Length: 239
Image (cartoon, rainbow, N blue to C red; front, side, top):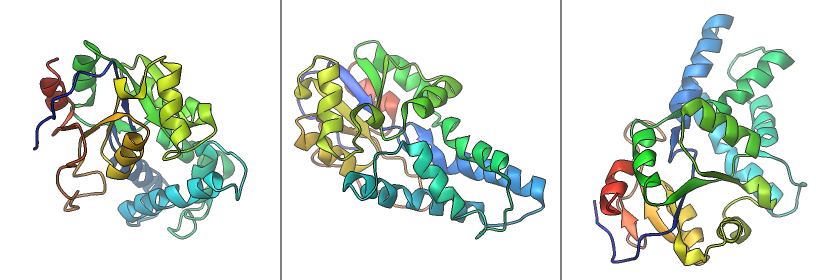
């Protein structure tokens, strides 16, 4: 992939989480398959996972535009889930629904994530910058063994990305200029919003995020770095 532009190593690397650090689709599909087997239900669990995720942006946008009051992502996930279980033939009680909704708290990391993050941690502060709520991110990070120095959630700022309050707020909490912070993400729209706030950016595509055969559109020519994975990013940063 394309290499780096000549820039000073950032003081902090902040990471988008869903899709960039963890495999949400594969993790959700496995959980749904397990529940389907227990209930004697067969369905396209990949389609279910995709439909659940497809509701993510519209639900957040309703909060961002003030149509509904602030709600943490766990609440938005539950609202989406309630509209899906019947469609896919699952009949779950309240306890089972709550347990399924918590699958987002135990997503599996991509294969390179833990080792790559440990390397990056040698020379930079590393942390999350995610739309996930604090409880979700703390439990997910502990379950996945992710070695963060800090966890930043949209919940801290009562704004969802791509609102600028999230990017600028994280830099301010670290007492850093935005230019000293780099967002690492697999999503070009997230990176563009971070750059508009003065952050450096690194694009790490995850070709399997939405399943096999889904193109990611090639390198991000606007990002400071393009890397194949977190270990490749560490190589480029000299860590």
